[in-house]
Length: 436
Image (cartoon, helix red, strand yellow):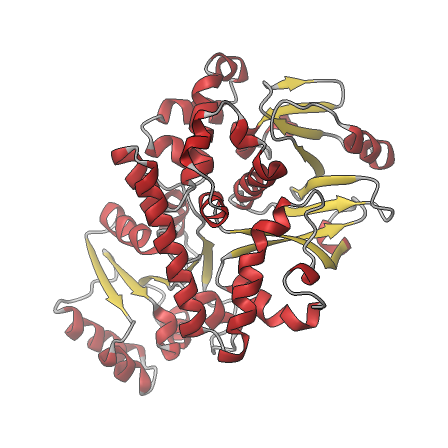
C-alpha cells in the first residue's frame, strides 16, 4: 500500500535541520505501518519500541534524561548496537511514557545524529495535556486515512491516479466512469488502511463493514479507558450526534441537538478531546474573505466532520446495496457524505486552511472556503450534477475572488469565472487555479 506521507518522511531524513519527528493521527490510520515501512525502505536497520505497558522503558526514562545512558539502555533492550548513520529509532505509543517525550528535547540538542520517529494513537491528548517537551525541538507530520488518490493506487489503478496528478482533464473525462465507480466504492470503504486492504483483496462490502464496526468499537473503548471519567458520556453523545448534524440542510453544529437545552460550555472539553484524538475535523465559519482567513474565524460557529467517510457511512448504517442503485449514494443524507468526503480530501493537503462561509443574514453559504496562503478560494459542493451556483454568485459579487470552484459529478470545465472540478479530482484544488 502506497502512502504519500512516505515522500515527506524521506525529505525529513535528508533534511540538515532534521529533529525528532512526531506523527499525529487517529487510531488505525496506519501510523505504525508507515514508520516500519519507512524504516524498511530507507534504513539498513530499524529498532522498534512499543511503550504501551512497557515497564522497562518506564524505568529507563524515569531516571535522568542523559542521552548516553538512554542509548545504552535502548541498545540492551534491542539486543544490538544502534548506529545513528543507518538506523531508524521508532518510539510507538510514546505518550504512555511522558518522560520519553520529554527526552526528545535532549536528543534534538545533544544527539541530533539519531533518526527518531514517534507516534501514538492518543498522542494529541498527551501533547495538549501539558506533557513537558518544548515546541521547536521536534518536527510534526499529520497522518490521515488514505485519500481518494491513495485509494485508487491501493486498488491497482496507479495510472488513473497519475492522470489526476498531470491534470489531463480531457483524458480524465474519457475515463470518468472508472473514477465515478471508484469514488462510490471509496464513499463506502473510506480510507482506513485495514478496510482498504480488505476491499482490495476481497471486494467484500460486508467484510469492510465488520472492520469499520470494530474500529468504531475501539474508539468507544478509548473514550472509557483514556478520557476523564466525568466527560465520557458527553464524548459519546457528541460523537454519536455528528451523523444527524451533517444530515441537516444547514450543517452548522448545534449543541442543542446533542441534548436538548445543551450549551457550548457543557461540551467544550468533550469536543477538545475528540479533536485532540484526531477523530473529528472542526471547520470554523468565516464571514469575510481576507488573508489570512484564520484572522476572521468565528469560533462559535463551526461544522463537525468525522475522521473518515467510510466510518460515517457505518455510523449511519449505509447499506452496500446502495452502491448498485445508480447515483443514489451521492444524494443520501442530503449530500452529507459528499461534504464529508470533500472535507477529508482538503485536510490532506498541506498548509491549506479550511473554513466555510455564511453571510450575517444566513442567505448565502459556501460549503468550504480555503486559504492557500496566496489566495482565498470558495468551493461549492454538489452531490450530483446540479450546477446551480446562487451562493457562489452572491459571494463573487461581494468578494471578487480570482478563482471559484464548483465540485460535482460533472466533467472538468473552465468557465468565465468558475472552474467545474469533478469530485474525484478535488485533491487538485490547490493546483488548478494556478493554471488560470
